[in-house]
Image (cartoon, rainbow, N blue to C red; front, top):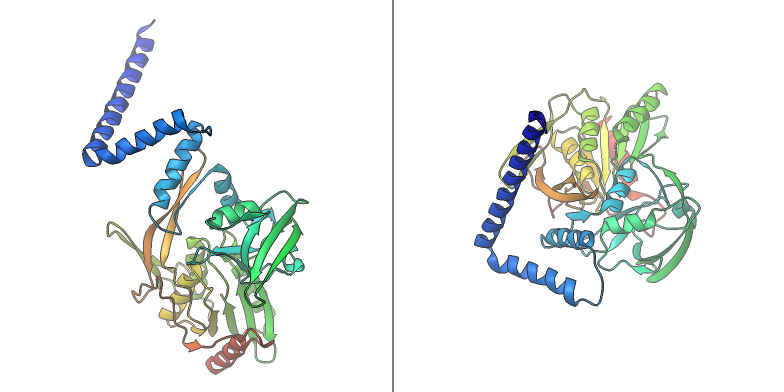
Amino acid sequence: MNNKGKGLLKGLNVIFSTLGVLFIAGLIIILAVNPIGLGTLFSVVGLVNTQSLYDINSRQMFEGAAAGIVDALDDPYSTYLDQQTWQELKIRLSAKFGGIGVYVFQDNEGQIKIYSPIKGTPAYEAGVQHGDIVTRINGESTMNMTQDDAVTLMRGDPGTQLELTIYRESDNKEYVFKIIREIINVPSVEDEILDADNGISYIRLSQFHTQSAQEMLESIDRLVNQEVMKGLILDLRNNGGGEFDAAIDIASIFLNEGDVVVSSADARGNQKVYKASSGKTDVPLVVLVNQDSASASEILAAALQDNHRALLVGATTYGKGLVQTVFPLRDGGALKLTTQRYFTPSGTDINEIGIIPDYIVADDIESSEDLQLKRAIEVLKQQM
């Protein structure tokens, strides 16, 4: 063997020796800090391998251990994502996937709930409604199921059937829907002119994904080009959130450059301030929110309220003031972990509290009239 080959082998020996030393050092530290806990873990692994009636491979064991560690945080927003679930999440954020056309959210009681079905999709046409509680997916109970698990089960190849069992509180009744999946192209923005004579335009933002800011700009350009927009109502009701960066980008459309959008702090006290990066769309603005406006919706609503850029109308928001970061893992999965708490521009922590609108309006689900929208129009006219 030449000197070059010997040098390579020597280098590899040094690397692996170093890794071995680090591994042993890590075990020593763990044993010193919690010897009983580590001993219990080894005992469980040994008993499962030698005594269990059921087989388990090492991959399943490691995934189970990772999921168990995250579950021990008792944080409903942190979860271990296996390879399939992580791929599904990336597809969902890209806004194009095979499914039935609904958004889902896990409430504080662990229930999987439907957010507004997307118009024209299989779920919408079948009669699935906002607020429906999903109890079974293809016969599998959603009890103790995570939001990501539910999303994964609802996704599937176009042309395949999904059986969705829901409980509708308003009817005190359970319904079973058999829905054929389709390719769902998910626009997050819908716009229309509510009152051409008074120049009142309306934009509904249903979620925050990678294309949302661009879609918002396109909608505003479309409304401006029609030369009727003198005031705008931005509807964030039933919007459960999505990408953090999308909220910053959309806030930048309406705020002055340099305005504070949101600030965040991690467990070690590291703080970061996020500011608007571009000039604003300068028209009077009213934002609609309700109890199901959460996460990124609350970041956007608070930024517009605290900077005195918009008045809020509706009901107090959900109250999710936490930021999750997704860390891809070597096994092809990912860890979605709560890493930061965020604060509104005025320094308010809204977690488990929510944002109180400037005008509180309870919507009457029994009425065919949208009372919150009606009040938003009145408020906007006063600003114009």
